[in-house]
Every structure is written in structure tokens, then in C-alpha cells.
Image 1: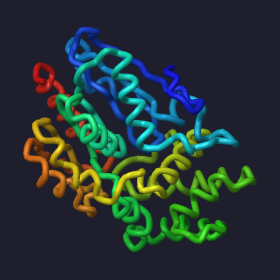
Image 2 (image 1 turned 60 degrees about the horizontal axis):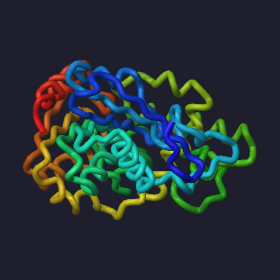
Image 3 (image 1 turned 180 degrees about the horizontal axis):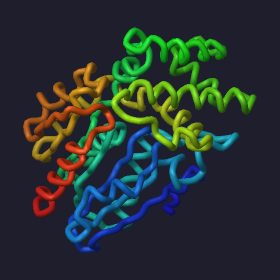
Image 4 (image 1 turned 45 degrees about the vertical axis):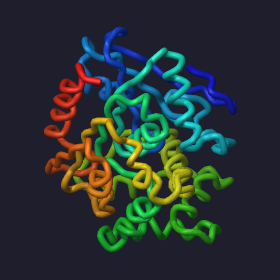
Length: 301
């Protein structure tokens, strides 16, 4: 556990070869936490694999699900500072950054902030953190998933927040009534399941503590535009110059409708993109390709 200020303790771990190529794993969500499966994307004989649970989730403390949770010190800027604190503590000069979904957004922000610290980027089911992406994944899918949207949006009317559905759920997730909070978390996770129709429902969505942690953090980041200027990652893509990158994307990933993978690729000549007949959650072919890419990068950088 690394004390990072503001009362936060960030969980981190490393495995593999202590003298191997450093690689950092950034999980999705925000709020998903790391899993043991993510280690398996790297050859432990060749990599020094570092994993962290981002603030407020997983094994980090305090959890965002606590009744009096204060999320004011949980922003993208805080997470970037946490990554740098871990890198400095471990004495890592440069490392490969692996990021999936929200983790890809965080990886890109980090790489654009500290390009000299990144040897390669491996991005899976990527995004850029734009509000147009998060709006797409909520109200933008209303006509595509009408039954799920009806259930999702109807509950939002219980909120007194005059904002959009993300603001309304963020409000309900901190409602003084425990039952309302728990129902809001459940409904949010039902919608998260609906917008990834090619993957089974995550069993973690059946755990009340995880549901509330996850839903609170996702809505907290989304309602604040992830503390990024709209289009910031694309505007700063020139800072990725010289960093090799691989983007692995499912053709059936509904978030592709934002066009973000292609827009980033056009601004980052060192990157390559590969597509799979999969959705946002990937498939066995994509998983196998992730391992092939990490094998390729093992002796570079």
C-alpha cells in the first residue's frame, strides 16, 4: 500500500522477473480494479510486471462505496501522480504501459504527460475520454437498446439533479436512502452490461460493494469529462512521437461509433491497429494477440 495523500492508500504489486522489462497494467472502469488474469499477458521470465488498483477501488482504500466517501481527491490528475509515485518508488526509468478501456485513456494521458517514461503503449478497446464518447455510451445508445434504455432512464427520474442521465445517476448513487443507492448501482451495472452485448454479465456486478464502487467512480469521472479538455488526448497526440504503439479493437465494439481509434491513429504514425470479430470485452483471438504483442516488445525499448 502506497500512501499518496488525501487519506488515500493505493494498492500495488509486482511479479515476474525483478530484472525484466518493466510493464505497468492500467485497469478499466474507472473502478474495475486489477485482476490476476492481467498478469498473464506478460512472460514472467522477461517482464517485471507492475499492477495497481486505482484510487477508491479494488484493494486500495478508502473504497468509493463507503457511505461517507469523498471523491474530491480522486481525479485523472491524482491517478497520473500516483503512477509517477509508484514508478519513482520502484526506480523504473521507462516502462511499457498496458491499458484496457478506461485504462487506455489513462495510459494515453500519462504518455502525453511523461513521454520520456514510456517505452511502448499497448491499448485494448481504447477511448480518449471525450464527453462525446461517454454521452454516446449513455443517451447515444437509447435507440439502439430501447428496452434497456427505458429501464435505465426511468429510474434516473428519481433524481432531483437537472443535468443529464450521468449527473442524475451520480446524484442517486449518493442518495441518503441506502436502498436508492443500491438500486441506482444495480441499474447502472445493468446498463453497462447492455452496452457490451457480445460479453456475458460480469459476476462482479452481483457484488453490492463492487457495484456501488464501480458506478460511483464511473459517473464521477464521466460527469467531469475525466478532467480533460474535450479532445485533449487527440490534440496532444504529437507528444506520442517516437513511442511504438499497438491498438487492439473489436469490430463489434459499440464505442467504435465515436471514431476515436481512427482519429488517434491518424495523429500517431508509430501506432498500428488490429481488429477482431469481438466486442468491447474482446475474445480469445484478441487475448492471444495481446500475448504475441508483449512477446514482441519484450526485448525492445
